[in-house]
Image (cartoon, rainbow, N blue to C red; front, side):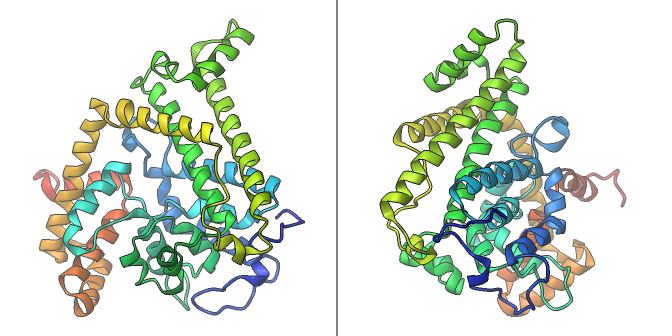
Length: 384
């Protein structure tokens, strides 16, 4: 961890603590302990086989949720050091932020949310919190990972006021319209930098979007002209890598400069004053924010709605929906430990409890495990 924390940074010694009391660690900070627990969790390992946009078997070179989380952590930690924020906390949040994601990326989440429409819905940020609070089973004295309040606060990026009221102190900031720590704000924006630029890179690698299309956006075109002007013999593939690298650098630089100015203007003296700001202090300039919105619109139209991606999304929807329906209809088809959980949850919450356990099971699947379960249950030639 960087030595001199800013007075408004999160300090583990003044943490709001854990849900279950524990003796402090001997040779680590509390946030280092959080990060280490996340890295050793089963949910974190499964991210290796959960994809961003492309289904896992589409190719080995596309990013997964695991590589994405590592990239978010790298960006966030680098910025954190410059702003004198808590590197260990921002890294823990970055590594945990996607733990609740379903198989098949955005399509899987949308499909599971539709399945859960009558049972409270499904949202991956809430599911990530559920993973670290309840679903991981590694420790003798508690369920979940028992992370600090500050790590849990950063994982829960979005929450409706209705759901927030069920979360106690953690949900109060959504009800009171307060801000999370600067470390949580930073992890959120680093996530945006990473997935926008890396989805763009993967989209070009897959041949779904072209260089010519990207050059219609002035900031990208400007960097591309600089690259080919400086390196005239560079191959297109290496030129694209160089442009993406420079675009990330431009965004990071803009984020640092704008955030510094915002912090200086607000002059928070501690983390509580950060939380009571009317707006987040970590953010882009207006010009960079406009470019990011333009890039998001481009990716939504040209990549996420591309017919090949839509075909994968349709397959994902069918797999998720079929698994959900058959397990809710007959929980005895679930593995024994999940079948037992259904029995326990039904006593408290009835059919909603049954559906939530099924959603937990499906959300925890990797892409290829979900495909395998579908084959085992619906392909007559698969007898086991």
